[in-house]
Image (cartoon, rainbow, N blue to C red; front, side):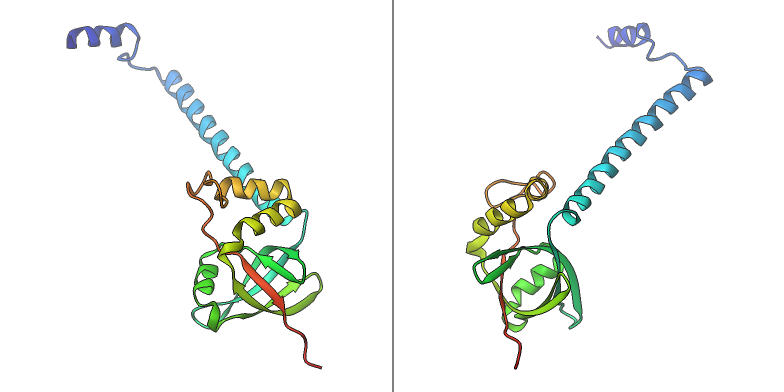
Length: 176
């Protein structure tokens, strides 16, 4: 049995030494394939960030951090009645959600104005916030949710459903 495998490999030319020219040709094909794959990945990453930033509204949320510093996050925002909703997803946002009672007041840069808001985690609002995001951001939201997941299906990159918690933002009236 082992002998027949050797014969098949030899007849297919798999055991033959390659000439320098053949080796260079194979190396060029390999480099080209790697370059194409890297280019496709770079294009997808670029498209992802472009879809997030271009089109509709992006706000800057000043989130508190464990060290007491402020982390500036660029996020999408949707409005529903008199409140606004954000859906942060970075690691600092997860800390902020866990400690929201002690860090409920945030500043949000929206357009040319900065406002103060009382932030409140609202896990039960996840399907509603996803629906509002889809309505406002369209294909860009579909793309992000396709990669990172939503309340009802896992994301391509994460392999799990969305784990971020929607944040309800209620405006704080300015002092007279």
